Image (tube, rainbow, N blue to C red; front, side, top):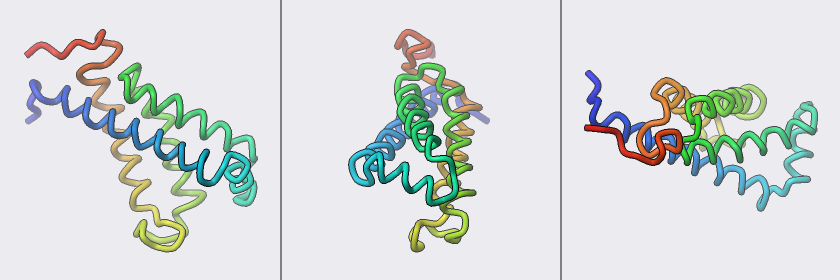
Length: 137
């Protein structure tokens, strides 16, 4: 059974934490790997380098949408596709454990599932779409 009084706050906690994670993940690409380094990494995987820019844009916009609750359930879907792409193109061949060299697919898989949960739950409490109001008890 789902507690309808607390479920909107669960959705809030999940979407905001995921949004923060995406912005942190993006900052790793920008400030540690650098944008040219990340674009080059995409090319080294055999992917079109322009997709690196698309990935960064989706992480930025999607992360902000999750944090604010602005169409969060719709923002979660392309981010879930990114995580699936990460598993297939980067982490899948490194094994299950994310502690493996190059990072396994354990963490991206969990991230993918959490994004699908947001897509199913909706925006939750304190979302821009609900004008920042808490749900009625």
